[in-house]
Image (tube, rainbow, N blue to C red):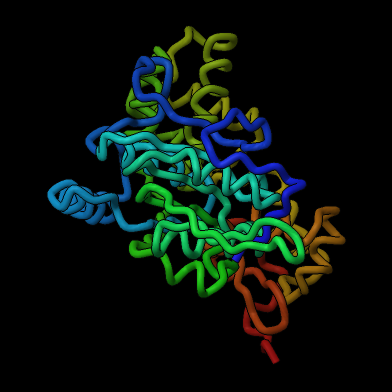
Length: 352
């Protein structure tokens, strides 16, 4: 139960509260000005997820009820926010978008919940970072569509229950394990978003290039896709940088050679690794004979903090099979040694 004092001056009617960091997405904007897809038939990749969501959406429409609450998790850049907007468009409803760090005070989350209309979607990014009070406010709102609160002080303290319209909460997180069990269990639909393969990324790149009026051929799109780390967000960023290179150094058309030259200039290799990725691998290979080496030691040697390595660099290196996590720390895999011609380490060394 949330405790709200009179001093906070909460207004339960719709209000222009500048402290509420959210935005209501409008779907009348021109398609050409936004590379985010609006419908499932435009959304590339995540085939199994799309098939499941289509069934859930169709069933919700026939029941004339909002969707169950949905939790999306997976690495950043795979389209969690985008697919939430697609769901809202398919349900013909509005979506309010915010992030957990913006909901610091009880009145922030309460203000948003009180402005929802029946059937609206509330999207909270990085939902694992919600503070305890905001999370507890969500529990009755998600289950019973009520806000349980107390107002006043001492003898004037009163408990009130305020109904809110039925809505759908869509949470997105890169760390599903960081969610508390009570919050995670209140989501009726839970899905993991997977990395994209090169073929899917090629389609994403071609679609983005068409929207942005970038001239690119299939070979050029495939070259960019191979270095995009399985992530559409990175692919879209590389398309723009490659376009700039093509305009200055070439005839404005992105072919295979132009794409490879541009990405070489950006120091992104054929595996999608940048300077920091390669520096991390080199530290393990050269200074620690291939590992194992502790993550704190790696962070110190690389000049980065532990969370940056764990959240930004390591997931892709592990997913590609370049690094192995062992009880004693991180070590290079035989695959990494083969790819980078590393021969001065003992791959058979014991882990214990």
